[in-house]
Image (cartoon, rainbow, N blue to C red; front, top):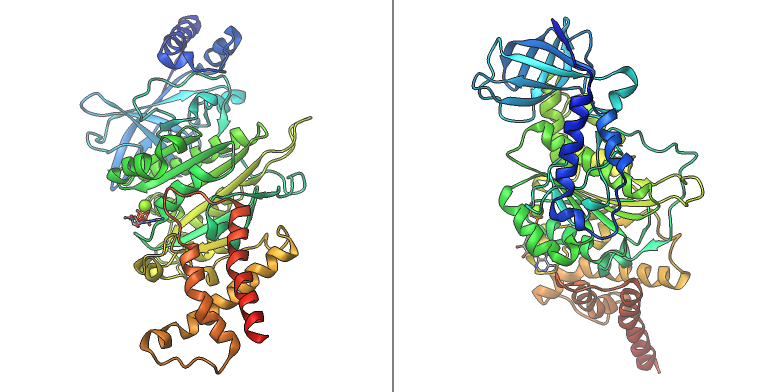
Length: 498
Ligand SMILES: Nc1ncnc2c1ncn2[C@@H]1O[C@H](COP(=O)(O)OP(=O)(O)OP(=O)(O)O)[C@@H](O)[C@H]1O
Ligand SMILES: [Mg+2]
């Protein structure tokens, strides 16, 4: 093992400050409302310079896992290392486990070019400085709004560099203390009729969006990011196909949605570590804005792909597969991520910010009892179910009203509003029962008043719940529209009775 101590780090500091100044000279420096002071620029250079570099060596490469000797005494799980390939490239990797004093690492990139004997480097930080290591935190600031970044915080949108920051937002923060955490805020206007009415959501609430592939998740996520009444939307796209990212940005989100969003993206071809980090980094960005007292909307598509990345990592580290191939650590890690969303804690004089979160879950073969779906459903404060049959009938968003629920309802709606949604649910349930009979022409009206009413109003409600991609319907408009349909029918019934 060799330890190279850094020379008096003045040269390194000067270089870091020069790099920051160059970054500032890019067009982004002119972004409005961002003021940087000299100490702000100097601090990251002073704090972020490692003590020296530790060198080890690759002794084994197997599957996606690289075994490294010579680093065990100074490194921990989660530390980032650099592996120098045979063609001289440096590949970023992360230590995922230790076995008999050797570190097991996975790479953030493809492992081509790594062989036994390749040198490995680890930047050594002082005890109190480990949080300053790039692996521990993200240098997030206001300049991230409107930008698309990868999980390491590197811009992907070709709009130039992000502004530097001395602040490091922890990627692995622990959820706020339950006793100090603020309570849920007032109801939040999601801009989508079906959700505003039947899964009314409060600021700081966490909902799951359960759906199969191609049922309209991305479109709905884009609509939510655009239309929800929030200060900032943070969107994490984990394991999406590369083609879809551009479509999501241009068609679903649009320039209007992007202007108030931060997107953290790892496509399906990226490594398991990158895909996992897309969730952690996005959560850190959302926490940063929440801790400023903002109302943040956090959208993640999808938790399932995050769990699949955890599964790849766990199995490479030697864990045993348990439920449907997922090792037990997946189900221990998942709540720690999901619990971070929600209300924040008051910061001094400032009120707590709120993080309203919607996590999409892929239900393969529309199997609602799949283990990830089951765990997520148990942790979150409500769920929205999108169904293929509804999408096929042309009703978008394809939300099954009867199977979706928000646990904050009825507490956040007025009595009159609760009465309206209960009545609508009852009608939709009855309509569901007789729909096939009506289609076959086998339904005979006149036997039951309530069923007749469902046959009359059910289709009207379904038409009403259909919403175009570009349409915004506020909370008030949603309830007014529902009242219009249900009350018109009541007065019609009364007239008929006279
Ligand atoms: N509100 C809407 N109005 C009209 N069409 C819609 C709406 N929402 C979704 N669609 C249609 O449904 C199709 C699938 O939508 P989308 O790509 O959002 O699904 P997805 O669940 O994200 O799919 P995947 O699992 O492949 O990522 C799209 O072609 C889109 O045209
Ligand atoms: Mg999609």
